[in-house]
Each structure stands twice: as C-alpha cells, then as structure tokens.
Amino acid sequence: MGSKIKIGINGFGRIGRLVARAAMQRNDIEVAAINDPFINFSYLTCMSQYGLDHGGWKTHGFTKTIHGVYLFDEKPVTVFARRYPAEIPWFQTGAEYIVETTSDFTDKQKAAAHVGKGGAKKVIICAHSEDAPMFVVGVNEHEYKPELDIVSNASRTTNCLAPLAKVIHDRFGIVEGLITTFHAITAAQETYDGPPGEEWMGGRFIPSSTGSAKAVGKVLPSLIGKLTGMVFPIPSMTVSVAHLTVRLEKPATYDQIKAAIKEESEGKLKGILGYIEDVKSTDFVGDRRSSFFDAKASTTLGDNFVKLVAWYSNEWGYSTRVVDLIAHMAKFQPN
Image: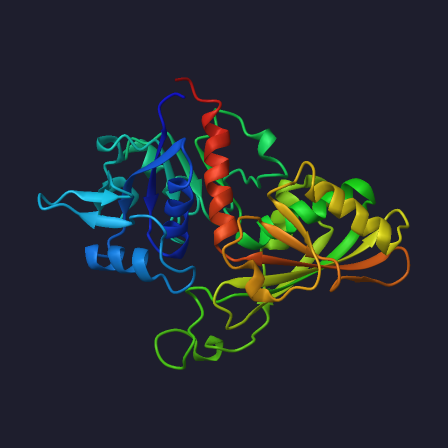
C-alpha cells in the first residue's frame, strides 16, 4: 500500500467530527489537520469521549502529550484556530484534501482560498453549492475529472434521495415527483425558545423550501425540472426521513418496484442504499449507508403512482460518503 491520503477538516462540528471518525476507520486516509476558531482542546476531548449524537469514540480520540503535541487516534495532528480559509496553512501539515464543513464557504470563490493560499490540492464542500460540481457516491461520482479542484458532496438529503431516484428512474422512468423531508435538528434550528434567531423556528414543525429537489437534478440531469419539494425541520437528534412521491413512465406493480430496489441494494448500491422492513428511527443511528428504503411504509396508488419512504442517518452515512468521495478522487491524482 502506498502513502496515505492526508486530509484537513475545516470546522469541527457534527459533520467534521464524523468525517474524522470515518477517516480513522480506514487504512488509506488520515487526518493531518483540523481548523476551527471556536473550539479548544477541552471541547475536542469531550466530544470524542461523550458525543451526544453518536456516542463516544471506540478508539483513542484526542489526547495531548506533555510536550503539547495533539494526538488523534495516537497519531500527531495539527490543530488551527483560524477564521478564514486563506489564513489556514494546510501546506505545513501535508493536508491535500480539505473537507469544508462550515456553511460559510460553499461557493467556489470562497472555497478556493484553501487551495490558493492554503496550499491544498482539493476541496470537498459538505453542502449544496451554487457553482461547484456536485457528486453523490453511487450516482455520479464516475463523472469526476482530475482537473476539478473544488467539488460538492451535495447535502445529506440529496445523498439519501439520489440513489433511490436513480434506481426508479433507470428502471421505470420518473415523469414528475414531490419530495417531503422530515429533517433532524441542524444548527439553524434552536430546540428551545430564546434569542438569537427566528423564534418561530425553535423546536417546531415548520415547513420550508429545500434545495434537495434541485440538487437531485444536478446529479441526475434527466430529472432536472421534474422534482420539487419541502422540508419539515423536526426535533430529532440525528435520524431523518424523506418521502419521494413520483409518477412513473412505465406501469409497475409494487412488488416489481420493491424487487428492483432490493436488487440494486444488494448489487451496485450495496453499502449505499439499504432495503428494510419493520423498523423504527433509532435503528439507523450510526449506520454507514446513505439511504434505507422502507418497503413496509412505502405504498402505491395504481401502477404509475408511488410513494417511496427512505430513512437516513443525518450525519454518519453522509460523512462516510465524504470520505468515500475523497478516496475516489485520489485515484486520479499522480503519486
């Protein structure tokens, strides 16, 4: 095996921590550096030992030697506390692939500072991006080209829906469809009343628009303009659920639809798309897959109209796909 792929993580919130954990469980990727201006060592150690959403890490997590060297999984890691990408000297650490987990630098111009002044080679944005090429592992990662320096891993909801939509569209054709997502808590939603922010959002089921319908079209161009939808933020810690309701081009029984999804979940999309029955939301906490088709909860009305229900671990499956995308990109880089 050759040298490991060295990554840097900008922002060490829930996604940043889980990307680090996912990288730690692979033999080909290591975390070289972390940047977050709003955390300290006490926070790093606390979150690695007592994470509320996904539990404590089963490895060594973060420690600090008597000489002041930070160790992550017993390996040295550089920790920065810089506010802007241009200020982060990734080149000093050998980090070549930067995982941008904050919501502040999601367009190409802002993210490019990691490459230009930071000295990294590639940036993976952990959100929708208006102008960066978007990839969903299992759907369109084969379209990645090595000249692309800044890419988006899309959103968590898009990673859930796109594999399922691909199966249905490839097998039966999608004429049009609606997406409804019941999404777990994010940083934008307060769980209790009180400033700052919009008080009507806190802890309530408030419908709002979602960019996932448009994003599915970006990774599956044949679905551009065919999907729209909305999201209900809900007070769930980590598991979300999405409904994909579509009108089909080709008539299909529900048994045929289930068989197609099951076949793909055991074949090309194994490890990405799951097929399940008789479940509850907590069953998905900590699962690496992007999406779980719920065969019992889904239903049809006739042979051309179907509602598909898919669960997803809001962060863990997504963070695993981020690392998978990095490994895929690295295949095209010269040694």
